[in-house]
Length: 208
Length: 295
View 1 (cartoon, rainbow over the protein chains, first blue to last red):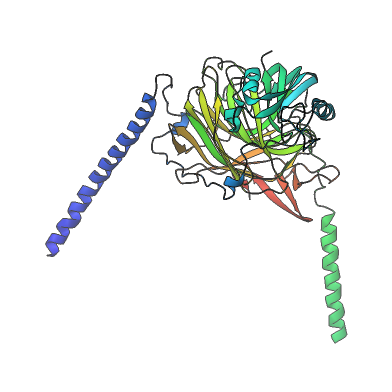
View 2 (view 1 turned 30 degrees about the vertical axis):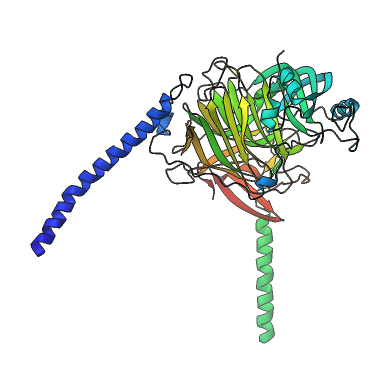
């Protein structure tokens, strides 16, 4: 009996390392296949290469799904940040569904010429203030506002376009790139407001 | 005899107090408000950063960012993630193409503390989508994921206690193929900015629809750090969830002490860089050790 036990121990010692090697090979094969599958993709998708420093090693664990806040369902998809003050909450101005006027927009921008993330390097001039549907805004700024905001393309917005000198900083330098951050410059820009609340919901640059 | 003992005890206590007070005279003087040069509204080239960077082709990235108080009297301060593309058509020359998202304290309508996402695509037009104002004192975390649906469409998910959007669809003309991920803090202005320490965890990159944890500290390993803002790996990236913890902070003691959210200041002295944390009039000193965080 004791002899049998010894045999089992010896057998285990010999077999275990072999089993481990097989297991590792199998795992490597599975994950390589996963990257290969990702690389296959559509013809337009460039192949996914391993990241520098082996950060894209196939054995890296996948992150668990994020926790959705308990109150998420109560939150509106279009919110933005406070901008134009609603001057007539009960009436529709200009028959376009807006609760503020062009004069309100001009007054706000006169009092608050800041551009948030953008650096406005010279005073800007308002070109136009328009009350438009999401469908019309898309034509003006080349952004599918209805899809981005998750609203019907008949939803009303207020679009202000201006001319000046604007910069959007490009973020931290990349390895091998100069540390100076001159960013993306443009001469025309827009601010888009929710016609109901007056909130700023999108801003950006336009073709010069 | 008893009176003598009491007198001796009182004298001893008095001497101790005098000794403590005299030692105070030799403590290092309180540093003046720290200044930095991170660019004004007319100087965009000087913005400062504390960022970790991972190069490599990916289909997207996600991170979980602490919401902490941010304040700047003369510029912008933000905690955010960038997903950059330097290889697609129209993106190969500086400033390239990119997505970004997070939260900022920035000049708009006076100053506003808000959550946002932004993108600049090969057509050359940047767009910023302010999602919602952050209430003062808001705590919690933001989950931000930006991933490619196909070369021309990206989906953005943003979950926070204050705002929720899942798979916000953004179209990019000419297509984009991201090849850099960056996380961290950006700062502009000349002085007086403050923040609490924020952590970036669960940092991962998408290959298809799966997101894999970043298991190394990127390139360069200690990040690109302007000092200020300060950035360091509080916990090195690893294979175990939630992975590495990249930390960012900017602290300068306000000249008048009137700034909201001011919690302390940095100074350099013979003992090295130290952060003085001011919490409800309680001052204590802690060392900032590069790569190891506060100890």
